[in-house]
Amino acid sequence: MLDVHLIAACIERAVCVAFVGALLGLDNIAVGQFMLAQPAVGAVLLGYVVGEPLLGIWAALTFQLLWVGQIPVGAYAPASAPITAVAVVGLAVPAGAPLASRAVAAAALAIPVGVLASKLDIWVKSRNVGILHRGENDLLDGRPFALGGAVAKGVARFFLKDFFLLLTAIFVGSVIIVLALKKLTPAWDRGFELVFLVSPAVGVAAALRAYWKRRNVLAFGAGAAGAAAVFYLVSITL
Image 1 (cartoon, rainbow, N blue to C red):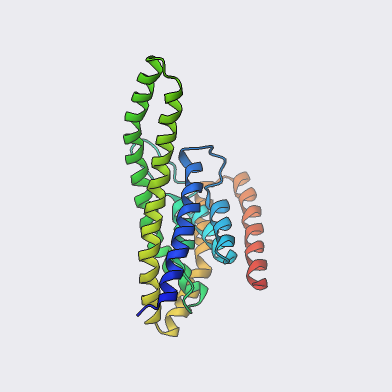
Image 2 (cartoon, rainbow, N blue to C red):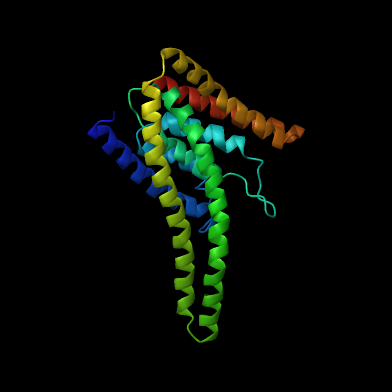
């Protein structure tokens, strides 16, 4: 059974990560596009916010690289790497389990969340078409300031979509992870640790495949080596 303090910790983490993650998610589609939503920034930032920088760096290294070559074309909508990485940080609630076990279990549940977030993006875009038309009509009727309200409403829909998706997924998922990890033996922890160590390498392989040109490979290899060095230095100092 879960104690009251653990439930409170799950709720606090879910609200915090959902709010910050939804704000960062706006930069992915609705506002700015300054790359703040990307896992390399957003997941690392949230890792520091919740007091687990290594978790944020691992989520960033894994999902930033894993889906780097996935580009939305036509009706194809790849899973949302920013939302997935944010969900990993939120789902991996400390509950006496090793970081590797919590991170891998969180990633397994976060991937469907990222897929659903991408589908919901398409739905919100379709709903915002109506707001656009109403804004155009207001503009033609001599109410130019109404256009700003229409834009704000469209942005709010993207924020609320990510906020409630992350809030629900993180709270429910973290409870599932805590209950599941309590029943696993130490042998499972060793398996999770192996997956934890290999996952960034899988991301590197996916990114290399997406940029398989000699010049790109050399540049990416240098960047990956630097990222690996940072990950190692942070891991041995925590």
